Length: 454
View 1: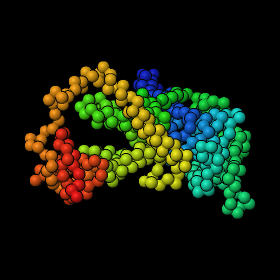
View 2: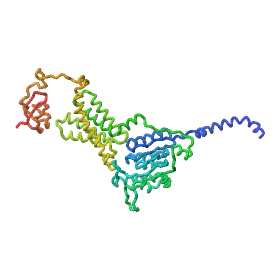
View 3: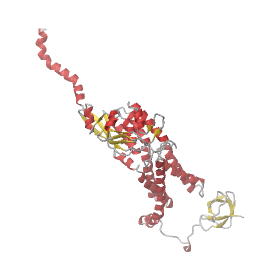
View 4: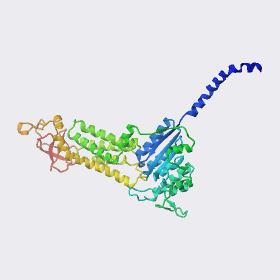
């Protein structure tokens, strides 16, 4: 015993060394700041916002955040996009708090209830989740029933009263199963606290953290990357109309002057800017883009392979226009049950304005383009007159008066068969069926003018 005490002073530095070695990780962990990831929902709930939240949650996971706080002030938006955000929040492995800084209405209320904890600023409101159209009028009960089910399911998942949640969509009249649309529940901060839909009234995110005994923390404010900001920019519906206009004009001018490169390049770039942002945001499905491409392919076949204009051209126009409309609508393979009539009308209007604007640009800008200095540099300007001995007739032998058969339908242009040789031909305006006998009445150009033999 005396021997141990005698050597103890020499053992103190060794004991302190081992204590420091084993306890330093715990001391370091205690000193580590709490990572609080902050994202803002302060605009309409739409595809751009849905993508923003999804990217933010992925970034929070990469940054190994300890807590996600949503700074919210929104009057709502599209139910389908709110539902995507709701599911992402419910599946988040990182705790999610929402700070309602004035408004969490309609779709915003659904998102808020999906969070683990709700905090509200003084004077804020939560609720009023009736599904309405662009004019603010309540839509049919089919949509209201869908929203009520989402509100109930979300409240149950986060431990809140599902009956109160569904009353934010419509109040049940006397427990009869009939809901009065328009009479909905909207909670003030104090009412939400009383009904356990809000943890506390706070004035800032810092106050939320202090209430949860988090004293040492660092904020990570999420912002979209430059590339994602570009994607969000091109989802603007008005800009989409301009892109459609450029697609149309580029295709037209390239067909008028093949080989210019610039018009078709402009059309391709405009098409990419139209479809890629929609695809990345989840609006455009593969089949919708393929529908548009099939329409362009059919139009190409009608212009360059199949003479005249028939079912192929009509289907080409129908497919291409439908593809451009559908990529703007959050439908599930032609299931428009959760797409408002206004959204459908808006999508059609944007495409229509873009197409009409394209034709206006073609007719008004076409002449100026042809007369421009750039166009004259890359195109042949000298004309070759017949009076000077020039001709566009490439036929080696006279064709006038020869007879044959219609190789294809002539409506009024098509192809004819003269002694086994195929020639391009057109009529005076009348239609000639395939297999009918024809007679050449003009061979002054490379395309023969024919009539039906009587």
